Length: 274
Image 1 (cartoon, rainbow, N blue to C red):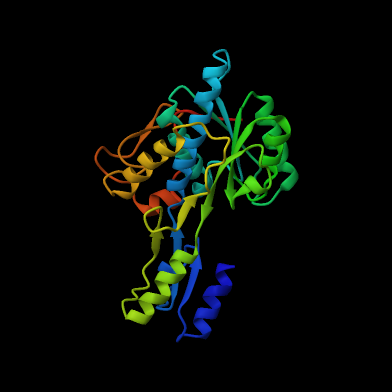
Image 2 (cartoon, one colour):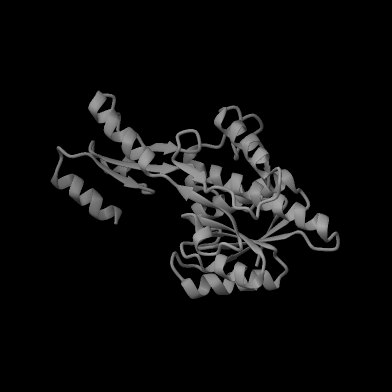
């Protein structure tokens, strides 16, 4: 798709072209071709808090249960977007439940409805009581509902698909960028630089918490959001421990947008690959 946007930009130099999630604009040499993306990992972190809080409640009711959360990913560690999203989710879980483990199973496809459900079922059979996802269909949430466990959806509010399972969903709001871009052009402040925006800018969020969420979840979410939106801390700040015993990052520094979107090929310390 991005190739076609670039081609159109070459053909119509007086029109500004913006491509979501792409990477070619910076090296294209074109003044009217731009990329934009969101800090979706911020809302994934927050949704991990929701999942971790639910697991806490379940553990209180059944002290003998294992602390396992499943995550259906479209791709493995070769894809930084999916890997970074899983890391952020797992970090959110860790922030409220450091004893929990996040099991990830990948489908190696952006769209594989049957494979996504099979991956979720496999994770549930491993003992996972909450199912998160970075894949497009609601099938992991449907599998969670069928099994009587809980889930965190993606893209849209998946409580409409699996109301007996979904705690919340990680969602995008591209309209916030469209509004900003058009207003900047109107105001004459348009720069055309690669754009990243997150919770503070309203480009990403989580859907309203369902009644399945544990008391106190909203307060924990508010704390996490305030911390991120303050600008004093972000998900990939400082030194981060990986599941292979190594570390990434630098104390007191924030990982660059380029590294977050393109160079995360490692898993956080509480993640297990299945």
